[in-house]
Image 1 (cartoon, helix red, strand yellow):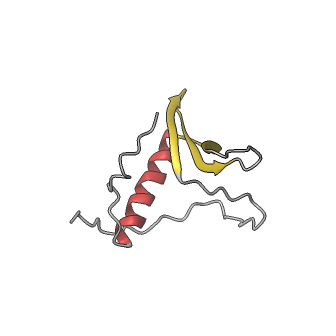
Image 2 (tube, rainbow, N blue to C red; image 1 turned 90 degrees about the vertical axis):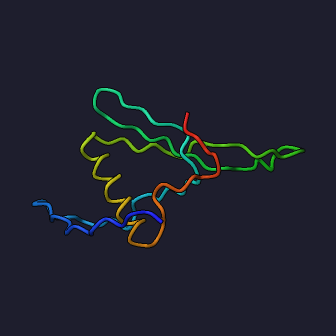
Image 3 (tube, rainbow, N blue to C red; image 1 turned 30 degrees about the horizontal axis):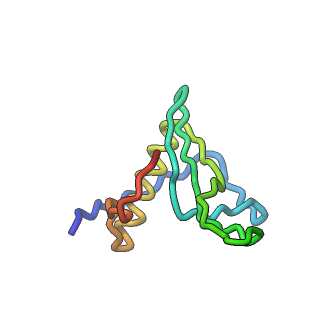
Length: 102
C-alpha cells in the first residue's frame, strides 16, 4: 500500500471565495503536456473524441483546455490532490496504463 499523510487543516484565505455556478467545467481524460515558462506551470488537458462527420470516424485526442498557475499555486494543487486521493483510498502514484505526458 502507500503511506497516508496526516490530513492538515486547510488555512482559510483572507479573501472570501464566491462560487460561480456558471463557470465552465472541463472534462478531461488525459494530460497531454506540462511546461514551466517564466514561473508559470501550464497543464494541457485532453480528451478523446470521435469525428462522426467522416465516413470512417477515427478516435482523436483533442486539447480541451489548459490550466496555468504560479509555481506556489501548482504546488498547492498537487499537495491538495495527493491528500484528496489518499483520503479516498486511491493511490496518487497509480500508473495510468503507461500514459505519458509530452
